[in-house]
Amino acid sequence: MGVIRIGNASGFYGDRFTAWRDMLDGGELDVLTGDYLAELTMLILGRDRLRDPGLGYAKTFLRQLETCLGTALDQGVRIVTNAGGLNPAGLASAIEALATRLGLPARVGYVEGDAIGRPDALTANAYLGAFGIAACLDGGANVVVTGRVTDASLVIGPAIARYGWGRDDLDELAGATVAGHLVECGAQVTGGNFSFFTELPDGGRRPGFPIAEVYADGSTVLTKHPGTGGAVTVETVTAQLLYEIGGPAYLGPDVTTRLDTVTLRPEGPDRVRVSGVRGTPPPPTLKVGVNNLGGFRNSMTFVLCGLDIEAKAALVRGQIEEAVGKEGLEFTLARTDHPDAADTEAASALLHVHLRDSDKARAGRAFSAAAVELALASYPGCTLTTLPGDATPYGVFTADDIPQDDVTHVAVLPGGERLPIAPPTRTAATSEDETVPGGAAAVDGPTRSGPLGELVGARSGDKGGDANLGVWARSDAGYAWLRAWLTVERLAELLPETAPLSVRRYELPNLRAVNFVIEGLLGAGVAASTRFDPQAKALGELLRARIVDLPADVPTGAGR
Image 1 (cartoon, rainbow, N blue to C red):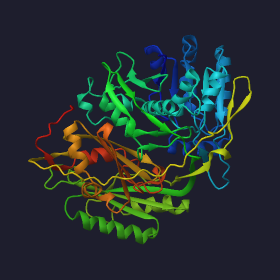
Image 2 (cartoon, rainbow, N blue to C red):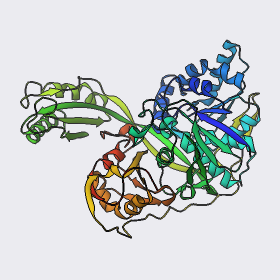
Image 3 (cartoon, one colour):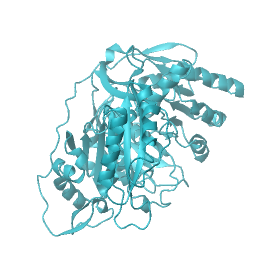
Image 4 (cartoon, rainbow, N blue to C red):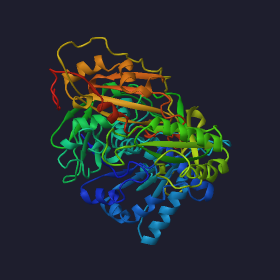
């Protein structure tokens, strides 16, 4: 059975700069990918393009490529990246100019058609599929640049080109989708951000970047280069599978992937086989991510030390509201103080004051100066951790959809030929997966008090204004308890901020996991959120730290 080795060297715009070089030097690869586009990144690139219409792509990628393009060409490693952002043609031209300057025979193709004309939006981009990438590779490209494609498409496209899969090879496409989802966030699948990082061979200090060995039947072995840090285990793979997902039906432009069919099993050191994935026809629509400038915002933080914390916060609130007006103000009191503390920091709470407004002047110096003016005229011990500053613009992310037939998906081959990519001929409207309340079979027996994280791992993240929280058990016995015990109602008890929100709960038995989607937790999205953890990255660790009654007969640690 054939195999294609696809590595990833970037999980976001700002990831480890040397990863491209490291991955090429570390061992054999057929393809090296790089993911640069988060929802927030599209906003950043949109603002870049406002300043200079020739920009709109991830400039860092060009500097990374300069260090390793020659090596990739010498080794026959093809490069696929979505660093084109809002201007894939512009990045493709810049790469061609770079190759000419370096005297290298690069053949660059690119994919376009994701940009949706929305005069009222800063950016509006459909999430394209993988067949445009495959067409560029089939057309002889050794570097392929895209704009907004699904993250997994960076892996699916090379697999399509290698194996000749068609639109009806749904199980194979679904398997490659899981592989792409696993490696898209770089080192996050090899031990980065892992709940049990202290168990990793290197303590999680410098995890290597991942490799997906994708087979002709769509199955995959996840691994990494020998000698690199971190680890590839069933649990590190499980953690990434649970990242930023919803229900078991994982919608994509080329296939709907059933995450409840994924099977994981170890296959030697730092090797995990992913198999059994099933696919159904994709939906008739494409997701469209839309960014708009929402206005301006500013923040100031007061330190409240010692006694009467609540009264001190109330005083500041009244003074700020009197100075600038109540509209758009938000106050968050973080009770980080400890009673009878021996040092100032341990005795202090933090009052975060945020202001959002369409008027830059009101949200700017008028606000921050009003806060500073309280330094000698407010509560005892008044001090701030922030200096007065101007307001900054913020964005609002929304998502809708567009019929697949309404999008012109085009692969531009290295010679300039423009090849239209037809949409799928077979689609299926996918109804939302049924949520599972839990608690159907309560587990009785003796209990002990301890943090939930002794028995479970967690991974959380953002999707627009929503957050997902995936929780997995470390053993079969732990899962039997977890699925019955961790209901939506209990989640509200443990994480009170979720109580007033709509929460969907799903079960993934093959992964020994439950996944929650918490609607509206992040408001208008990451760029607009004033939440302490705006991307909900720490939500899972907060849950794991809660002290609960654990079943005494379920051992800690991984096991069956």
